[in-house]
Length: 218
Ligand SMILES: [Zn+2]
Image (tube, rainbow, N blue to C red; front, side, top):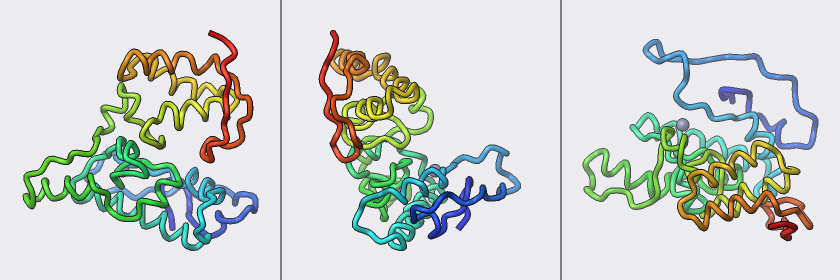
């Protein structure tokens, strides 16, 4: 199955080296802009699916992940925008988030946000969705409105541990800095500022809660 950046095949669900890059192909409607509205980076996800340690078989993971992406795209066709705060309600209140692999494998069906939003959109209910929501525009300035984060507290559950796990990679440092600039409270902004002065004491894989840090500076 072809996504925007590559093919999803059972090949990816082994430890074999990656295949040669797939040829570039694009499918657009005549009235659409050149720039697609939704780009689900399948190649990145396929590689991570291969490392996922869920109890699902490779075939099951492939099927669930494809279902998740199809549900996401159907959500767009029904009128839903992205909701990058779905992951704040673990594993996610919405298929319209860009979910990291473990959460995507747990969100095969519409989430509570999606159901409430569709009911409101089509006049089946007057209830405004109560789950957190933000769209692509909010992602520019709201640190909790992030693609591919996870957990109810992404600063402490995702970006902070990954910053240490990655060997202080600038990509994750910049994620921390978004919290320094625009964290929800002074306490959050201060905690984000202090994370870079922590050093990993034992840091295997943060998704498995094996990243233990101790503070070495003030
Ligand atoms: Zn999308």
